[in-house]
Image (tube, rainbow, N blue to C red; front, top):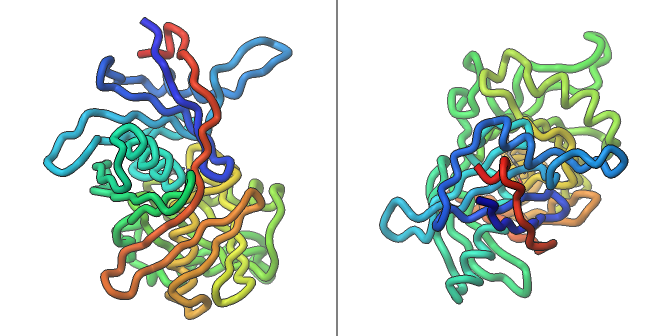
Length: 289
Ligand SMILES: N[C@H](CCC[C@H](N)C(=O)O)C(=O)O
């Protein structure tokens, strides 16, 4: 039986979103890869194409409108996806005709409110800052860990910050915004570094002002994406911890910007950004797992 999906994105970081109320969804890694594979028009192969697949399941606990699962395009499930969280919050508020919503994920309860037309604010909870929350393979000061890429005497990047937003992030601070080739070459080296037993999302953050970060992220399990919501949260938290930015900053990708606040009162990370609805489609038989 085929299945309807919604194609959405947050600043170009794109998703195939399915609901599982009427039809369970327990995909294999191969099923996910088939859905996420970018279509190749010449050869006519490929799937829908996306960075992540998102399932909106019925709620499992009081007070939640849903339980949400995320998979990267490599087929592996992940605990968090910031841009996807905004899209899910928007969908749930639209369908529930509400201006606020809460839902559960592997990483815990998240909540969202409408902040304008197709603009959503989500509370991403508190960051994990201890070495074993990232996690790292050994104890280190996560404000700036002992890691460098490139020649010993002239490293390309070094001493990054580490933050968990329900998923692992390492953030290198760079003198100027990096290009795709640099982020790909360096990010792909660090993604599976033994220091990160669960892998890691690799951010390259240029602090342009105390309220402005320019960011590029090589994502674990998805590679270079147009934007990364949890990456933006991680970069802002890592920057505040080093005294580089104030508590509220614009985190800018080439595709647009998010507003990130690491709230002083309760340590929660609040992200505001856009939601884009691309189209509605039908998953082919096999992929409709
Ligand atoms: N690649 C990430 C998941 C998606 C994160 C990103 N798309 C976001 O908006 O936060 C990971 O494996 O932890």
